[in-house]
Length: 281
Image (cartoon, rainbow, N blue to C red):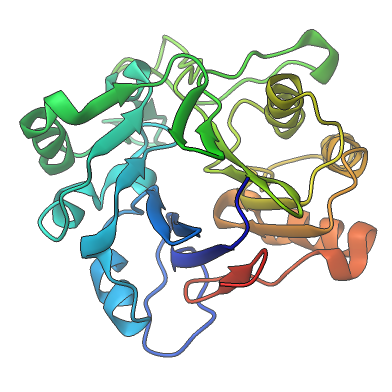
């Protein structure tokens, strides 16, 4: 059980502190009872500089978790590994698959792990921990592993593809979250929640046997959601009785506004430079 938890946003689409850069991406420094885990690395444009500006020592990171294999979550890995030597890197095998998004004009966009990050992973292949199933990082902090898509939560089409011609849909089996068991309650951290917010929270509930959570942090991938989809996701969040909701990255301004209207002061304003406290640090 983690008593002291702080999460520092090192990369995000928005900026919440002076002297840091914003970018389309996500990176969160998790400090749990003095141990440091990096969740995602953003594109890499601002990770190291932002960490320096915020006084976050990357050299002390023990583990790195990659939520899924898109460039805006893995692009900073190569530079990160020049600044630290983590004992383990946690990712799902499908994160290494080729990944593409359709473009109006050919060629379609490659959006997978950039080559420098892939080379850095290959150099540290003996430190990779594959996370098809639930995996403990440190006591009290776990990766969900692959998240089942439950029919009750509706279909979840990614809009992403595994082939250059964008004919084979990418099921994004690599999408995973982290959950932290704190003395205040469960804190769930999502990269993009490509598996769906409801599916992600249901996965954590099944793994922990808990129905009410304390904190939700990260990208919720709601930026293209319809009103009906926003309400369904709001229902999935609401039934877990969260006390802190900190949406960022791919959640989208419209979805953020909806969540703010529905959950009021529970919703935190987040950007690069934000520090969230879930217990004394």
